[in-house]
Every structure is written in C-alpha cells, then in structure tokens.
Image (cartoon, rainbow over all chains, first blue to last red; front, side, top):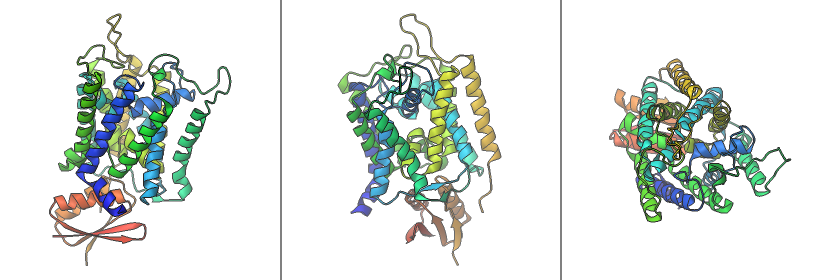
Length: 370
Length: 69
C-alpha cells in the first residue's frame, strides 16, 4: 500500500494533484483573509516571521505565519509515515546560508517567491510575467553551472537529532503563536495592526492548509525552481506539469471567487518597476538553482531531516531582516498618488551584489565528476 | 563488472547528471548508488526516459540502481 502510494505521488498525476491543491488552497486562503494575490508566499511569510520575532522593524509585515510552520511539519509527518525521514547535513552550509540571504533579497525586490509569482499571475497581475521571465533566466544560468560541474559537495547522514532541529524550531514558533506570547510592551512577538501582516486567515485554517500542502509536496517533491531546471537541463516536464496545475487551479478558483483583476500598475502588494522585477527574480532564481530548491522545497527538505536546507531557510529569514532594515525591499505602487513603486538605490546595489556573489559561487565551486 | 557511480550524499539534480553522463559514456551495465528515495525516483525516471532498463535494490539506508540497455 505504502509503496503503491509512493509510486502514485512520484507520478505525473501526483505532482499535478499537489500543484492543483496548492493553487486552490492559496486562492481560498486569500478569500479567508490572507493578503491579496498572497494566499501563500513562502518568501513573504518567512519575512513576516522575521518581523514577528523583531528581526526587522517594518511594522506592516509582522506575523507568525502558520502556513510556514505547517509546510515543514506536514513534510515531517509525510517523511515519518513513509519512512523517509533522514537526518543529513554538511554540504557547504555557510554557502547555503548566504544563498538564502540573497535569494530573499531578490525575492523581496520583486515582492514574492516563485509561488507568489504564479499566484499574482493567477490574480491578473501581469508584472508577474516579467518576474517569471527573470526567474527562468536565473535558473537557466544556474543550469549552466550545474552542467559544468557545480555542486556544493556531499552531505552526510548524521545524528537523527540534527534533523529534528528545524521542525522543533517551527514547533516553538507554533507554541509562541498559539499562546499569543508577548514579552512586554515593546517586546516580541510583534504582530502588524495594519498592512499585509494584519491580513490573515484564522490560525487553524492556515495551519491546516500548510500541513496538507507540506504533506503532499514532500511526497511529490513539488518544486518551482526544479520545474524550470529540469526542462532546461534534460527536457523533463514532470515537475512543470505540477507548476502548471498550480497556476491553472489558482486562476480558476480566483475567477470563481471574483479575485481576478488584470493590469500592470497598482496591483496588490506589487510594483511595476520592470527591470528590477526581472533582476530581483533573476537573482532569486539563480540562488535557488545553486541551492537546489525553491523556498517551498527547502522547507519540505528541512522537514524530512535535511539540515542544509534548514540553514538555507534561516538564511532567507536573515535576508528578510536585512532587506527591511537596509530598505532593500520593493515598495508597492501607490494607487492614490499614482507613484510608481519599486526598489531604491540600496536595493539596486544589493540585487547586483547578490548576482555577483552567486556568479562567484557558481564559477568557483565546480568539480569534474568521476 | 558493472561500472560504479557513487552519488551518495548528493542531492538532485547531481545524481541525475552523474547518471546521464555515465549513460552517455555508453558502458553498460551501470550501478548507481544513491541515498534518498527522491534521488532513486529521479534517477530511475531519467534513465528510463533515456531508454534504459532499471532495477532497484535496497541496501540498508541506500539504494543501488542497475541500468542496462
């Protein structure tokens, strides 16, 4: 039975099911209170967690998002049930940390991870096409490095406790959230009272959706970066069929819920500064390709015991804090004043710096396989 | 004696890239060692797409995939 289920989830229909469930749940989460075109966004939600812990001071994006906790714990449950939980670590964690930092800086220049880019498109935000173009270019550059021998070295099987650290961290966050911990008037946790951080579905709805998605995604290896990489690297359309299902399912659900509004300027929590949408997602795509997974996939891997993926997640949370503290993140278009949003000069420098760092990593960490 | 490819400890896509390089070299059979179920499924799918027959043997915490044509 278990082996038959494993085979189904590993099939094309398995990954299509996972993509469709993510798309539908994301649209429903938006209807249930999450921010517009942001039913799910791994980068944004990790940024909100960084804010809730007080790692950054952007008061409008602070909340312990239960979806993120659910993703990792759902993947943990799936890995335990199917006996795939395996603690492993030691594949260049310091490199993965900084790839996480710059992936987040790139994603926040665009205002979203690849999942949100798809969800923005499914809500009619045409800027997402430019973002997805940048993502594809970034991944394509990463594929060239992979073809020329880039890798971060082998990981090693290690003590089971190592694999439990990130799930335990998420369980700790859940504890803080459920007991609404507030350590003082100006102490953590910090929750937004206005802005996207204040828009949230009920905890149990968010957590339940996260757990289901985490479970399915762990079984099917759903990965947006991997979908593009596999097409470019070996003409393999397995994962991309799941990504297509996500987009289609979210679009249809959005249509049914009246959540589609086509346009470019003034889309929700988005800006139309095209060059930096493109380069921001290009940076993110390259960093994901070098690290071996999109932000969602890194959470699922961390849930099945991959300590290196956990380090990438911590890098992303740190990157979110840096992005907001140094004013690197994109500002949405302002519909009332008609002012174009986007990133400022520091953000531009950070994105370019990130691209340089990723290129250096790609060029200097190559070996010939024997 | 089968050609050995040790992809243990690598996460995808490296095991798949290593398998493809071995397949393109054209010496069969090829034994590929991987550690995770993900790598097992990915290498199996990639090898079958390239026209190989794949048998899988579970060895403790590892898998040995034997590719033949």
